[in-house]
Length: 366
Ligand code: NAP
Ligand code: GDD
Image (tube, rainbow, N blue to C red; front, top):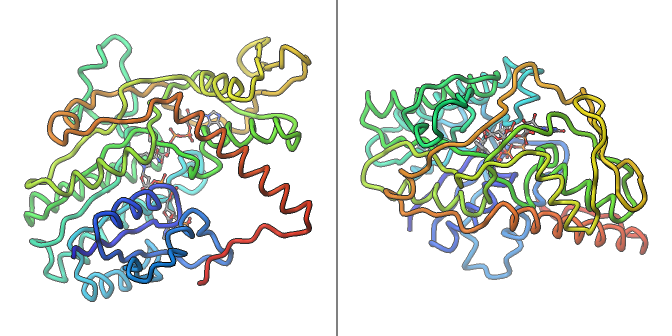
């Protein structure tokens, strides 16, 4: 049985990765930082599995800023595969907390690589680094999209991406210097019903569900013309696992190769609840109205402005297709539908419980 050590377990990617690795009979060591509030609702279903024999999980407490703890943990567990997903991953927040982001996303990767090396596991342990599409930053509209791939020049546009660029290069450096198996996954935006609530897709689908159920009046956004290539996290964790099953380490762009605007995502989400919108005015005065009631449902709020922005993201993911034989199964419309439906179900359930006097509690034991 292979042993996997996974960092960053409370959010989206980990929960899908854990489901996949369980199917493949891994022993999973998962590490989480201590928080004063319980935040394990995305993974509770995995730990509430009634079949004892499926419980191949071991919880360890740790933080990306704590190297001593990681050195001890890696030496004790001796993992076959390390999936490094933990990060302060919000771009806007990284402008508010640039130093913390550099430490927890950039230097942290060095800490874990060193932990593997000093435990003498550099020849046996495969290391996966969650890198990001936005490392490329600018996209030159005059060049065909097909040109941009794993070796295109990088131009990060936020403290988060600068930290991730360091993380990617230090992983490449350990591969070249110590012959470690280090692969970088250059990920485009991937979403799901388990996406954190402040990323734009989930913010939109939650607001649409709440507006439909009369629990929220309006949705506030910024930069509706930003374009992103959105895939489903479930598809992307499969690529993650495939990368570590290769004979040689390598870097891969993982994307669906279709780019849409935030505006499109808003429209599709409202279409799922049969609300048709029409917009009036433009730029910071933009407002969207329900064509039946003429109630304003979406507005622009400069609060979400970013000092530097990446307006367009679309890259060539053909290497992952030809080498890993990886193909995304979900389209962005299917993803949007699943997210809206799941949010409607969630809020309906919460409201029903509240109406019966129950508090909606998280059930995690630790
Ligand atoms: P996410 O939802 O933001 O989850 C990040 C995880 O890291 C959480 O479990 C968080 O724990 C943990 N974490 C953050 N700071 C920590 C610290 N100081 N110590 C310990 N744990 C810490 O991210 P995701 O969407 O699942 O993405 C996973 C990885 O892929 C990240 O590295 C992200 O940068 C990268 N990535 C994601 C996308 C995407 O579109 N989703 C695209 C490109 C790259 P708490 O619950 O305690 O906060
Ligand atoms: N979060 C957010 N909130 N974004 C908004 C909003 C809003 O209210 N209004 C407009 N946007 C725009 C952002 O300015 C950006 O252009 C786009 O929507 C997507 O924003 P996010 O969903 O926050 O994602 P991101 O692209 O900045 O970053 C995500 O993807 C990266 C990979 O491409 C994160 O998951 C990063 O961790 C990841 O590296």
